[in-house]
Length: 162
Image (cartoon, rainbow, N blue to C red):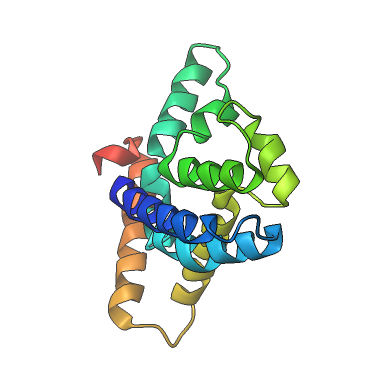
């Protein structure tokens, strides 16, 4: 995921350099440029690798629950490569400083967090796998994956040890 973030950052800086000579462009156009040019690079294969990239977050959250501590969800999630590039774009578009509120900047632009798009893509991918006209190899991989997870849950194994 980190290498995709670097590629997306290159695309973003390329757009920045080309747009800088035009002056201020409308927010709608800026959002469109990001959605059409940067987001596809950033979310390539995200429907499959989404859970891997957020495993650290879920593990930290689990450790915090065990030790009866709270975890700052916003701070932790904002450090993911996807969010970092998204926030760079949002703050650049508004001309905001790095220390500006992340939620406020996104709200001002009317953008949802990148996770919403990725989760939607993941759900659509899973629903495509459950249709009848899918590649039989993909269908078999889904069945085996579900079987392994089911067995691990029955035997009390941790899913990362499968």
